[in-house]
Image 1 (cartoon, each protein chain N blue to C red):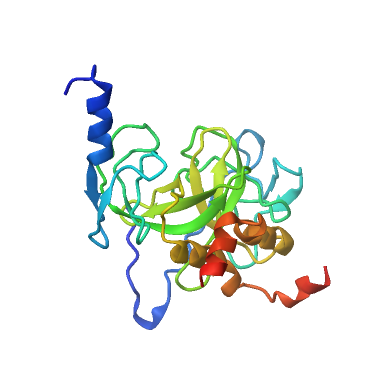
Image 2 (cartoon, one colour):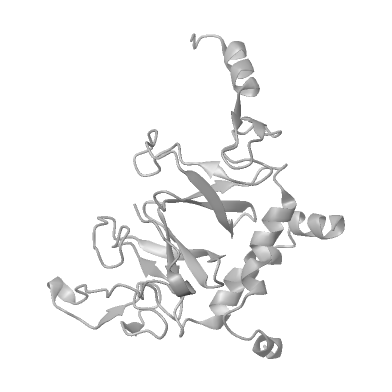
Length: 140
Length: 124
């Protein structure tokens, strides 16, 4: 169970370092290959210590359960970006859906994530001519 | 409880209610379209009663806040909930009488606070 307490001065706890084995057969690697677009992605990301998705196509892999880097999930399925959520402090979170087991997970976006893909995801609820969207706009 | 009386069972399910853990509203458990509802139509909060990994009842029972809107390929909206106790995420379909103001507020929230300037996208 994780509880977030307000810290004096309004700062968040610094992110835990993520120390995992990314290479083949457990060898230490400093990069991973995206299962969606086969891009080689460096683990060093601007703005986050927990990069878990491809900056180009935003696809992730279901290997961690709750703590970034714990490698506790036995699924290993592909996770596609499902939606965007906004934290109280204005940071965007990317919600991933595992295509194999249906599990959801949240991760902060990184500084070099594909802005066009993020905007397309953010506009998805409003884009589909939405019966709900247009009805609400009329009601307001 | 006898299971061989479908009329009795449907009457039970259409009459059962639950109380919202956040706003205290008493909510009918069946939505107007006949589906079971699991979140309050007024504040969209839910309660963590089902274990989504194993499928059985959950012992957490924490409050679940709505954090985002997901869109299926069919165009249907889903509400993504996060448990405030154990941080589990779930997604549930939107009911017809859910609070549209809160739904729209969640849908446009990312665009209200973008992490990068949106002006550049006008050129595309």
